[in-house]
Length: 410
Image 1: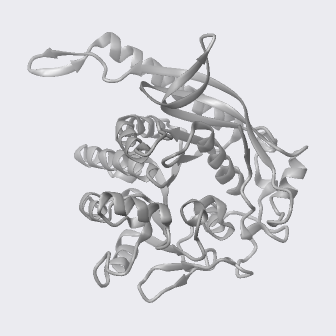
Image 2 (image 1 turned 90 degrees about the vertical axis):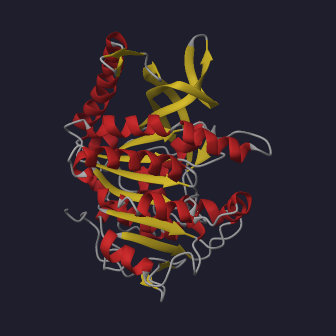
């Protein structure tokens, strides 16, 4: 399926700031590998996996996909990274796919011994074997590229498998290719009038697999940081999995951030019930597990307005005055490093997909991932509104950035 490179971030217009000379030599290519983990049902042709559909699979799969950028060379692709909306935008094609590991179906068989349920040893050994194969592939990519940071992307509703890879390719390329890109693809894209509700249920189905995926990544000694970008209903899949891991590690007496190796969390247009966020995430001190949490909101988000109407509850991705009490947002920012960023100009078809289609929003996401900076400083010059929400203007970041030739050390 043919897909396109997003319009370049404002950040890179004028030929500045893209760190092409810092991209590892092996990644200065127009057909880089993207990794994926999915519990979508596979498409089989002659016994071979050729893709994934919107059905569910009890078995998680891990693999790699070759994504072809529509440029003749790396030099041409870098040039297009600086082209404005009137220029040629590169195509993206998923040209090949290889499933490397298929895990055992969940739940694993158990047996009762001395009053406890334990996984049958043979089944446990098989699952461990698959886990080690997955971790070995990630280790090999760390050695090959020198990148010890991972970038995980989780798509939203009405997305097909290739679309998750497309968005990941955009985010990864524009953020400077300084990480290993991994898409978590859950069984979204259900058709019909009730497709949204089927997708919501499919997201809940995927929480356990998402949790296992994150656990396996964090257990790789060579992995340093895991940055996560989630969109729309994918934010529910990921925050549920993260919350369960946080609770687990606290029960083990471990600091969640150190155990999970989590870095920056970005929730773009989150389709999350505002009340549930207060009760299940904020009450659990969820943000303690991250360097920072950035939540991009748009009161004019048409998809979240529909979601709010269907569920009879406000969505945090369309945050409005009164959704939190006086001083709460400012307190979340100061104490919990949770930053709300209000998007300006996101209307119509862009009102929900702005995180990858809006050059200003994409600029701020890139800056958050590259510099690790908090909003409002020199490296992320957002402006603060009276309600303590950061305002992201359409022409952001203007010419207010210093030279970003080198990423800021942590």
